[in-house]
Length: 78
Image (tube, rainbow, N blue to C red; front, side, top):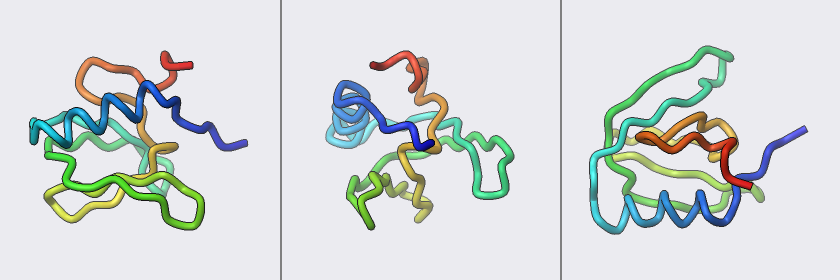
């Protein structure tokens, strides 16, 4: 089952992108491990019906992989 990010969480990510604020992003990597990255979100898009962010480091992360951005825990958004 895929968890779809809430509209409120997407809006928070868009705000961080628009303000060009550095973010600390905690996410599940493809191999199932947990990674933490300090970066800026430079783009948000949908690829094959999957919401994605792109960071200034060139890393693409699915919103369904994100655990936390700064102090905002993704699963707390409904």
